Image 1: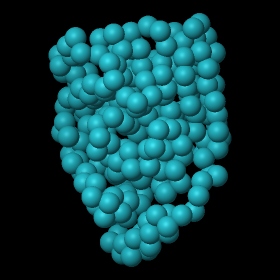
Image 2: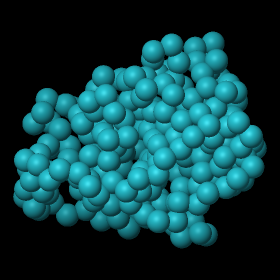
Image 3: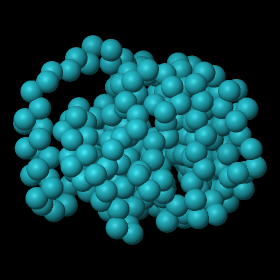
Image 4: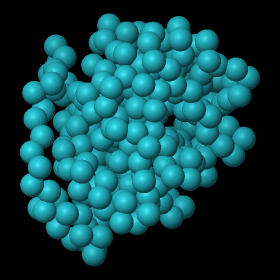
Length: 262
């Protein structure tokens, strides 16, 4: 089962993310990774196996980052490998995403992206969403997430960061849970048992909302008010043409009823 952790604040993010992942180990996983925003870039580290294997790959890059996201993955779409592990990035490498859920129309979205000259390098449904957000990005990460999610069919709990907006972490949920913890001078979004800093907990109980987090502030918006443009119509057309069937019998649920995927 997948677990996602995110942090934005004034403390070094990396040890908080690693601690969050360790507290999510009970969910089961076969790979792990993290993304750190720093110095006008995103540093990605991913590893197959236990979190200790991920820790062995950490170096000085990003050690001072105060914004980051992390993930433990249980493979479904694509086997356990570094290329399939989260976080996934956009073609530019400047947007990173972690995801818990299932993108049911990922084939149609992948075909659409390929028609735009954007090719995925992994076997996952999640990378499609990262690439789609990158496709829509025009200087506003929250809006790009909203536009991309408007095209998605399925379930998701996501956290997204961008090197172009290093003071921002965008999160959203539909079907999969997302819990936000607000601490003393910090904002973070790990699951409750990973909340080592939080003083207030907000459960995003309403699906279909996008949360934009900044240090000492956050904003919650619906994401259904987006333009129904020609790209939206094209994606729907591709989905209708995709006659290949896919079974989701390997979908699992946690004790809390979380629907999870890669």
